[in-house]
Length: 295
Image (cartoon, rainbow, N blue to C red; front, top):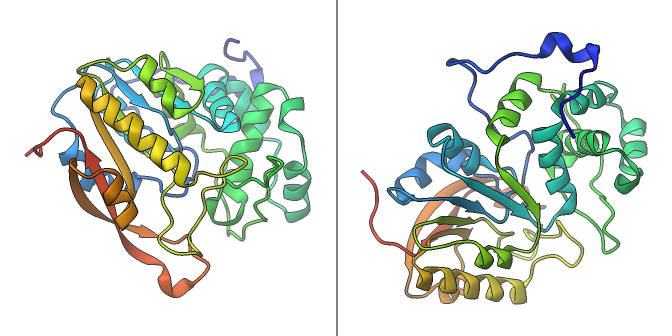
């Protein structure tokens, strides 16, 4: 579907220019990498042929590298259908998404009415706008579903949440232009990634405590079985000559899974914990299939 020609958004159109703002994640995501980019950039490969990110989330690393390497083919995917649908709509029909976002209001009863909607029954642009609105106005920027797949995050308390950020959404739409965005399991990267490509895995983290487990972004969550399957995919890609990088919590289980690979520790400020005393800077690991650090 092409971009909307609705006159309500005609004045907001702008052609890309040299000083256009760099895209930033338009969704808040638990474990997002925006604040870790400075620590992670030196750990990236010196070069690569194609970029793959099978757990797209907020896509902080993608947006950062897309600005630096706009001509490198990129493939984004996720098992979360709502998330993928949102990215596709922002890429392909942003004007209609902006119109739909303009109809939303930040109010508790309205939030719960929108939350109760069935996404599958909405047009793609309205469906994406619903995702962005709920993400920006729900508690702590969580994306969490119950066993039935129903979004169940409560209303958040903000002063003035910005869920219709026109300038950044346009920058993100430009960055996503020409990018493959697909719904699928992380293991499907094995069907495409070749020697010289770069794959970045940012899965739901192994919980460091019983109160920090927020992996239910799909029904059933992401437990030990999935973590072991991911480690197996990591090893297969590495053996193939693919540059593979993975982020996860710094736990004995994670270090056991990736024994033999380069492991670096980074420190992230995280606030998702029911115990406020346990919020703060936490050690995370970056696992790499390749050695060395960039200057």
